[in-house]
Image 1 (cartoon, rainbow, N blue to C red):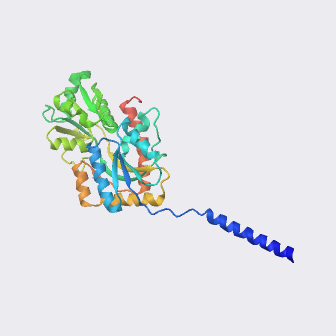
Image 2: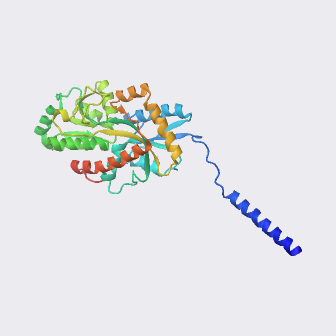
Image 3: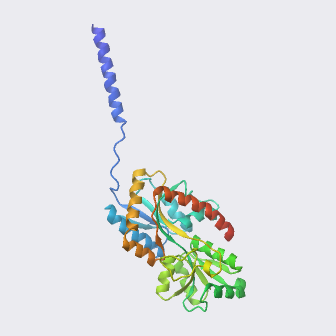
Length: 327
């Protein structure tokens, strides 16, 4: 009897230990998102056109999310510093990179050794807007349209020059240069603002700028915008003719999106996407983007990620056509 009772006690103890072990291995419930400060990463300096856009969405999203959102500027290396910072961050939704999809896609082919793969190391979870870079000259420039600019640049040959700073702007300018048959020389600047004095002072013949910066400088009376790179005029800047309608077969529509580190939980991704889409439906946002030369662009996380993959494929050809040397 004692031996039998001992076996029962041992079996009971074993069951109890197993139950304790199972309880110990239960994954604790994840805290509701968001419960702490969220960071929006901007790849351009404070005060730049891109910074204005990122800060606008940081403010609007924070109100909907009920969370504090700060903007962290990490400029340099063709936006790769900001992209890598986001990709290496904890995949929890607290680090969100708001940037040009075209620019980051182009870097995959412009860099000899890209620090990250934007398709596999990042998740594009929302789109923000559609936009297009613009060809601009100084307000007092003698060139009133792209045909006049082209004629002048053909006369100047390699004595002509143009300013670029962002990847999308460089590709647009290089494609225009090739289509127009020009030998104009490219001059790289760290930011669009850095090139402004050279444009207005006549040291540069023209520049290829993002619409946020270009339209702001046009309103300030510093620049004249000659053409937009999209195939159709933008709703936000309908008065600016396309390069295509002026005789140059160019179709380079750009877009901006929100990206997080790969592995961010699906429910967090869905929540962030919903925040952006809610902001994009607000009349104030539609007007804001229109004032910056862009159109609101709503998508699902799956659509946004597919767009990034498609854009990466397209930019392989753009970089080849523009003959941009790898860095």
